Amino acid sequence: MTPSDESHVPTGSHGPDGGDEGQPWFRLAEGYEQARAKEDSLDRLVEWPAQRRLLGDVDGRSVLDVGCGNGAKLAELVRDGATASVGVDISGNFEGGPAPGMELLRGDLSDLESVPGLTGRMFDRILFLQSIGYANDPVRTLRAARTMLADDGFILLSRTHPIRWAVERAEQNGTTLGEEYYSTVPYTYSHSAWNDQVSLTKRVYTVSDLLNLFSAAGLWIEAAVEPQLSEDARRRYPHKQAWMDKHLGILIFRLRPRF
Ligand SMILES: C[S@@+](CC[C@H](N)C(=O)[O-])C[C@H]1O[C@@H](n2cnc3c(N)ncnc32)[C@H](O)[C@@H]1O
Image 1 (cartoon, helix red, strand yellow):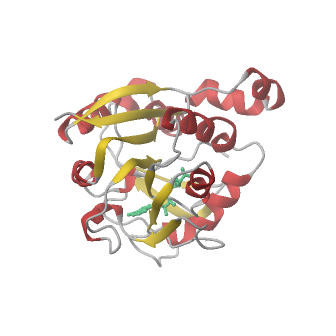
Image 2 (spheres, helix red, strand yellow):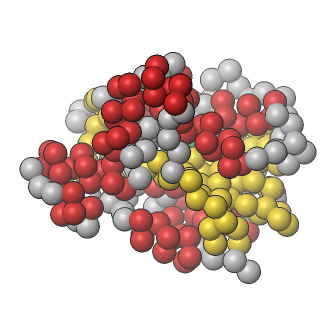
């Protein structure tokens, strides 16, 4: 599996056979979780451990996980002491239901304010792990999240390194890295490890776009990380190191309200 990427779907992504227009995740969720659960998935080896480290101690903290997938990461945080926590995902693919101490809600992150169950709630930590790219208007979504942050709260956000997409498109189109990195043409692709019958269309972005997004949402970057495989994982999974050497991986940010 490649890193768990996220993609903006502005006008509706669709499988080649139609169906679920505008909402590919109803059909992708199961495949995504199966790929993520594999022993050598980069989410298990690199992403979640790094996200977890940057999140720090959650004991007694309330956590909102936006685009939470099946809720497994949130359940782990609740086992680590998080309280009054909520996961939101559009797919509703909540296998096994919520663990005690957490709720799982079906909802759209493009309209966080309208998700029943979030009204009037505040959280110490808000997570966007490979999910902000699905917002129709990411500035609006991050601003909405910012209003739900308790005092001293922060947002943890991870996103696929934009170089990854540029590398893939340069290979496909026979162009150069720079041409693709700075291209503004949306990228449509299917993810063979998740479900090759479903295609996603993403708005491409640069590192500057990401920084400007945080700024426009009134957030500042307290810490940023570009996680890599451990020495041990490099030896055990050389094919994953080869993938990382070419595609770089993900970026993770800890974001705090600017004022
Ligand atoms: C790449 S997965 C990441 C899942 C999880 N956060 C993780 O780190 O493993 C993206 C998730 O975003 C969810 N998603 C996509 N569009 C969404 C939307 N409009 N509102 C809420 N969730 C959405 C998908 O259903 C999927 O669970």
